[in-house]
Length: 107
Image (cartoon, rainbow, N blue to C red):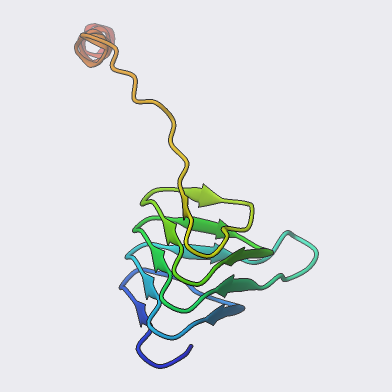
């Protein structure tokens, strides 16, 4: 880990190179073991990794790049780019109410 780099609480950054002044958000993990081999994650100088991100090695986040919070990154992020993954939010109206009321009836 280079000088000025920050790794927030509840993060796991193993088998990784972290560049100067990089910022890694809370709850971020480097997924470095595939069940057979360990792989390295490289985070470039000044890169910003949002909270609750999974970096699946081998992967590199380039200098000055950003990763959106909650993303699962499986491909390299080029310097200066923003990479993020999102599943669309879906709301099922009254689903929880129906679930809990049917559970109470069974008791």
